[in-house]
Length: 412
Image (cartoon, rainbow, N blue to C red; front, side, top):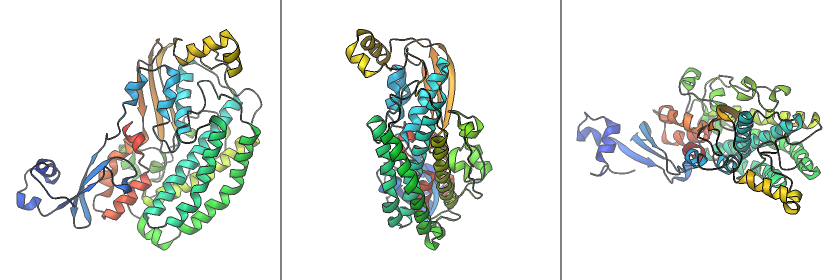
């Protein structure tokens, strides 16, 4: 708890109401939740107005790790922006990478081959599973159930090993290129994916037995941090947080990309939009992702793993090291010496937290004239004070965890 000092009196009085007396102000305590509190899972702050253990009001503060990604993008060649995107939601960074590549390809009018689409789907669904493993296992930890977290987290590591085999990176992946992948998936990659698909279902089932119908877990999560579907839409929620409130909006179905229309899967929805529904929706989405990956592997088309765009797709390393033409083109692409068409496009993908969109404006130059990133965390975090009002302090921690607020995506 913190006391009301002269320095922060006005700030807290604004929370409490300007017309109230000093005596009324002192009836409440103020809790500084963040910006470095371990339960926030990121660098952001909430000043909570407390009546004992009950939250009366909250004032969020964001921007502690704002890195001006959009402004940085306006001063970088298109190719070098990929490394900015994977630092947004770093729990599912390949989705960010591919979303950006799709945006540039849309501006260029690139037609991607089916094999590339299916490979991208595999990577994005692996990233979704990794993201949901983190979120749901942390929700369990915040209720006191540490065992499930320690057990299921090893499969997130196996997914990172797949990333590493494809691109050499694990967390901030920089995976793929404008136009496709650097190389086709090796037999070792497919073997690791098949091994994951063999082991993961049993692990998810075991995790659900440990947690999902656990009496303590249900008492801590049912009817906690709820939001109605109508109110969620007013806040522009997307992703699992919206679907938990009963609205079946999914970018993969509403505006398909990467040939998602070829796949058969179900959009899981909840009813009450509470912490338990958010947990259950993410849990079911992992099962759906496993099904999508299996379908992609079974029906994987033959053909190229990249589109025919030599002006933007880096030449093979053998050409770069051994031919003058390859070296020149590599330099021109990386340093942004190739102009792009004028125009403006919006491309969205279904990220781990919802609709991740890129609004790109090009003036025909070598860099974006303007780039705006629709980060789902930034959209739905504004509802957090309303969702925790009237709840206990311990419930506020759970609500934040179940929303999966990622600071890197929130602040950008």
